[in-house]
Length: 354
Image (cartoon, rainbow, N blue to C red; front, side, top):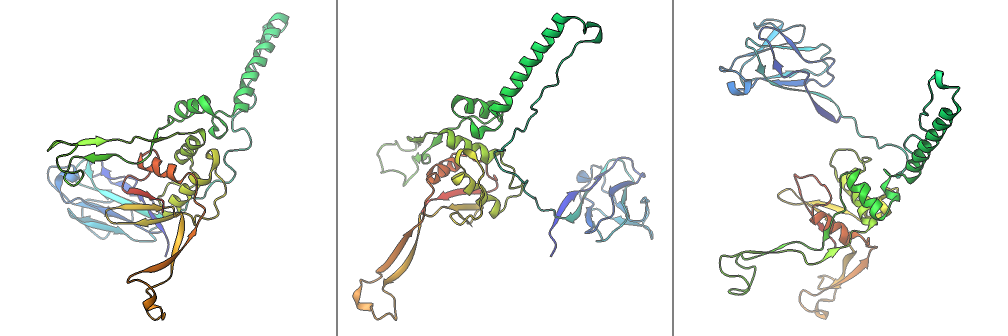
């Protein structure tokens, strides 16, 4: 099976009635689809009308051996392997329709190299200023130009060596200034825990703390300190493009691992994501699980083990094998709970540290 992607058609409106337009350019290896809306309002007209399609040249306004009529609400499937352009026509001006083409999906290839970059990513030499020819014989002006170029090059060297865009090497106020001023992301505050609503029934003891029919919002009392290291990891979460633009399990797990192990926002080689698991629940909920260990049943009330009378009813004996727990797992959870780390808005994300 070949992975495909949908792309918008070249045109989705007939500007002038009776004048055919190209809706899709050939060749179309995997074809496409054209839909003539059922409602007149969706067509942008007062009265719904037919749409006309041709695969062998400009479409006319009459169904024949060349032109195909699509009634309101009708669909025209452009065959796979179509080598020609697809033409569309309509009797009225500004007739709107829907259309897309299908092409092979090109997977994203991460760029090569390391992050942060090892060499300057900006110009290292200025374009020096110079005198007009008629002033070349003036030694004072020549000295001024040399001094100006030397100062300008000194400023350029400072910007090259300080690596301002490369926030992974900055700290303190300089890091905060670059994060907010250059990348538009101020240093955030990370609350520990979530808000709690007190007021609805079963959220407090009756007739205590909250008057009847009242509701209070109790905010977080504890906050994590957003250190330079944490701030740099958050910036990398927002700015790193090496994983591509499509949300997948691999995309999510790699970003979580990079946050947990990428000191100062760097991007180390991530050869596995075993410490992170992702599960999907009902209602578009996504659980990001960072386990502290694995527990297995080793004994207890297990039938056919000749040990039935040695343990209490339903008693089990388990063995817990601790796993290396990333130190920043609680901070990662706080960042997700606070909405500091951008994630697809279609899902509700919950971080579990077991």
